[in-house]
Image 1 (cartoon, rainbow, N blue to C red):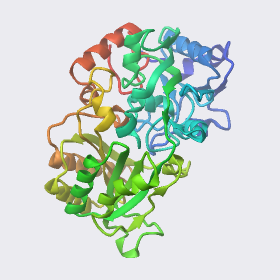
Image 2: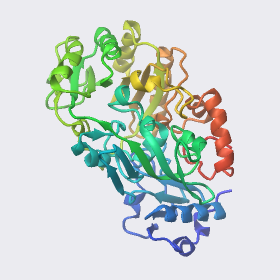
Image 3: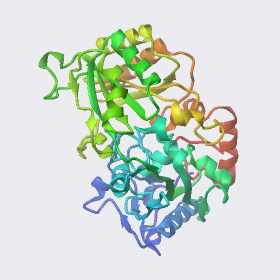
Image 4: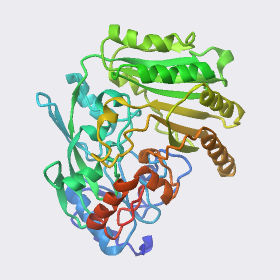
Length: 456
């Protein structure tokens, strides 16, 4: 049973906290409760900007004892808006930005309130990197515990494949350090199982060397041949190369020919972990697919893969995550057909060829189990107002059904609020059974339920 906001004692909540408690009367309340996804307008009774793990433990204990709904927020990028509660309490981790960098040992302890971009700024000057996702402003907390699929996934694996420890506050308010030797089953669970078992306050990463980088945006005309050819080239590429191919309607960008605006193009972000000469060889098959409409792939910093973002941009979009075995000419033709027929102001089929290092990790080594899935697909359609949402969701379902090849895999970090079966698809078979047992042990009352929830 959830306690109503009117029955929460803010004075009691504040007792013993080092961090700040933000309430509806505070001038920065609206800013503090806003998340990235548009259309989410939840009003928590209190937002606690925690100062350390002890603060987290106190708030967790308060929520457990009172029954109030608890949300945990890092960067606020949850597509379902799980980083904010309506009437409950938000543990806001954004002040937890401690960094302890061991350059010679290639290790990093990072506070869970840091963003992917902030971690990059700390380690990249030393020729080191930990691969996160594709957006600098994403908080490392949710991204890491869900898996982490980014521009280095084929060379370095998932973010969780480079996680060697963490500090966790469990539902009983205990602060644990977990790794391969300490609470190993919980350590297994937080590597892909999301926020089901506690609040991560620090992460311990193994860093990888990145002395040179070659990458950027390549825009190609989208046809059945270029799309299928792009996927084939990505599958055949050296593992140092990872791609995110957005097959989408061309936005009004100054560097694109005017006649292409609104037509379907491949807007690809390509990253190669190596020098320019090797990068040019790796990119040659992509550039040979068609005359590029724009080509910004060059030698530079890995940080350049993460362009500046507008903090006031809160898109409303329906989205669906799935996996495919192949994108041949027929599948590619279907993708183009659906994108051309939609009336959404922006629509996209994002293709991420996987494999490489992430596929060599055994499926049961972490709670991210989809190691053999070959191509991750994100379908999305922007909508204008709630009245338009149902139509765009129906289009997504039809689109997904038209290209479905039987792989039920789902990436939890790209799930919206889509129901328990989709969560089960994210954690198949024995993975689900292990996660349920962990939930029963560490969160039997389901305190941490605002996530892609594993029910105890």
